[in-house]
Amino acid sequence: MKRVTGIGGIFFSAKDPVALRAWYKKHLGIDVQDWGGTAFTWADESGNPTTGTTVWSIGKDDGKHFAPSQSTFMINYRVDDLTTLLQALREEGCNVLEATDDSGYGKFGWVIDPEGNKVELWEPPAGQ
Image (cartoon, rainbow, N blue to C red; front, top):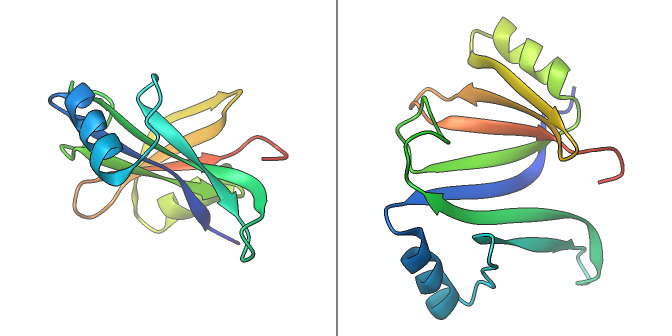
């Protein structure tokens, strides 16, 4: 079974997300959009656009989005078969959260790594 196939997104929380977004835009040239982040389009070895994006976003540090983790970040990993992977992780003794989400954006599940970081697993909708 294939597990992680790529990074779907990187999410940060910040005490002052507006100021932190502005810093990344000014100093690192990240094209931060009004919604609080950007989507990096994937390219092949020749630089030609290909299917897929990686989201980068900074949100308000409200202590809820990454709970039960105390981290100020969460990485979203793309997977091919979320249901099968979550079951395998449970069988391997991993701390898999019971909640899942299935929406127009795809299927989402979460696992807590040994350091207490919440890890998001994302099965994109078909064709993405």
